[in-house]
Amino acid sequence: MPNIDFQMDGSLARAARHLTKVSARTIARRAGIDADALRGYEKGGDTLTEAQIQAVAEALVHYGVLFVAEDEVGGVGVRRKFTRTSVQRIETWEGEGGPVGDDDI
Image (cartoon, rainbow, N blue to C red; front, top):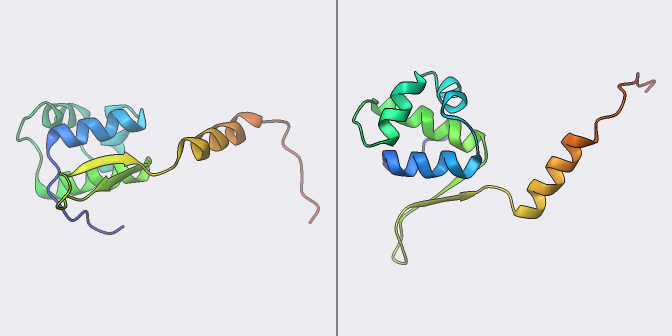
């Protein structure tokens, strides 16, 4: 996974996590860090190393965040990787279920 090209602070991490609706425990597990350390970082604590911050950013990207770089128009931010329509389609596919059968292909 490519490195994120900006310094993510705790408030940006918190905003990204809330945008994905994924728990701190899930993001922390994916990033290989302690959930309490992530929560502390999100609240403004200086508790994570650069490598851990990178791992958190990559975990957030995995769960559907797209980081928006700072430019002349505005500052750094986050947005959903998928459009609202795409998310609704994915949720529909996941909810279809049905019995599992063998493929004879």
